[in-house]
Length: 368
Image (cartoon, helix red, strand yellow):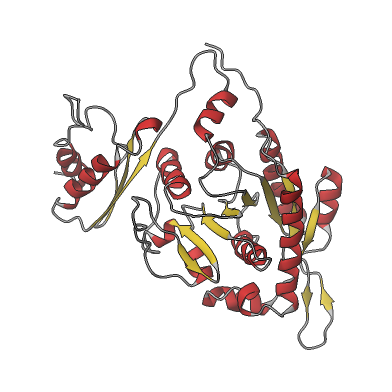
């Protein structure tokens, strides 16, 4: 019998309370992904019943763990709220988005139109720059397919359940609280999940983590402008978004797409950051603009959004990031750390002034 068939047979023994059919017959089990001895899948539930579904999720996890040859099981709960006839997508989004995350005053997304522009490194150092202002800061690694926080923050341990709660406690490092799928899954395990599983995991990391009282939660968004990014932007009460780009035209084209995505869901764009803006030669002190220069500033002016600052190419940034020692925390007196703190100060000025107040999503009517 194939592994998927064995797993489904094990899950067929689980019948939810009040039902006569098992969770497989009810269509609650998503596509099952088997990677060697690791298994991953999602259980679909109504949004209002997510908390009551936890025992069922645990039962499914235990049942699959007993299948011969299976060593590790990851089961997430995902809730898809259907759009009712005559209801706007905006209304459905507001219902799904619900209230702000408990204890969190502001949520800021750090995004890029494409990968490889240094978005995650920028997000970590911006978070640390905000913390340097005396703010209570958390960071959520929303890049399920390529989580960076374990490496960037030097965190190897697994999160535990918060005392007196069924929620996970975020891990803390350098004065900020962090959560990432990379804390839960081995770094060599590929996340071959489809959209609903990814969104279920993201919602759990956002709303089922005991963040405590935070002035700001920084969300390191996945690169690009696909369905996951758009849905996260629609379902999360964002105070604003930051776009990270390099100076060259190709990166700016993708950055423009990211900015337009946030505009479409009425999330305020707090500004654009130009990463890898220039390089100062350590031998002669000459400035070299390897990827051109000033493109992000010009784009910000063209689009009418703030330009937040220029981050240079710096060997110490790469070295510190590889060691899990962010430069803003570990070299706080360096010029580079000063750049991040200045950018963070501009961001907080925008947010705290009310520029980042959540706006209602666009009105798109679904005709039946």
